[in-house]
Image (cartoon, rainbow, N blue to C red; front, top):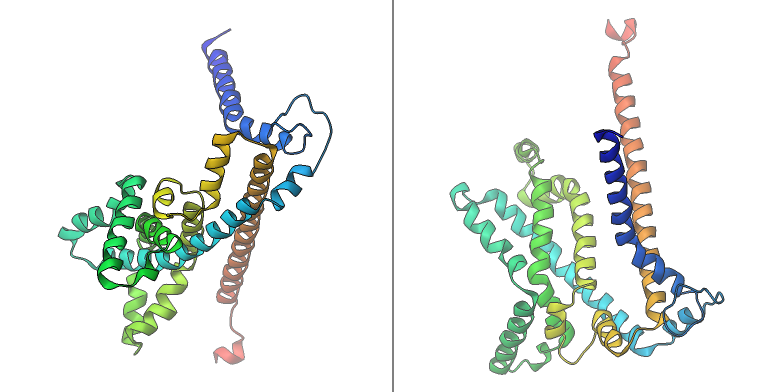
Length: 292
């Protein structure tokens, strides 16, 4: 036995431990969702059942929390994506000496604990609604959207910034030279280029909102989301219905990832075919009669 064999054996052992740690809980939870015992049990497997999925569908608190989480997630997407896009565009336009200070200010919500974001959001809007008399603004869903958007918009800004770094500003200058206005350049030149970043930031914003707990716990007030309902259920003792919910979430995530990968590959094949067709058209010699 030499050092190479030992190194390969250690690497294999580490890989097995890593994936067991990563996927082991998911495997156990997936099996317990289809097992009959009333407590999540993967072994012994007594009998196959779909009872826990039916119980989940009839759980009023869980369904209400899911509905609220989806509403908040969509609200966060609608607010964070435009704010992140605007922040990224300003980042590319601001004077380079002030860029580091601007970046620090914009990214600072990511470094702020979620508890502080949630509490500060509630205190600020409570005082604002008291002064203005607009008590309808002091709503748990509304406050959760605002509290989550403070840091989710920073994530979106980072996505847009990385995309804008590959943008050729000569395209904007050419469009302006041809008579386009700035809104037209933004709509017809910049937005198509940023389309992949817009989709990525929207998905990131929704998922970050959907799974957020710290900020949501304080900003949601007396309302509840799926995450807060789950936290309360776990304190009381877990059930296979939670395993069923986990199976559904994992299945949706995998389906989304597979669909995205298929679309990405199809777009790559289409782009490659268009590039090949353009090269063949360019290399095709013109007929003698036309050339004359």
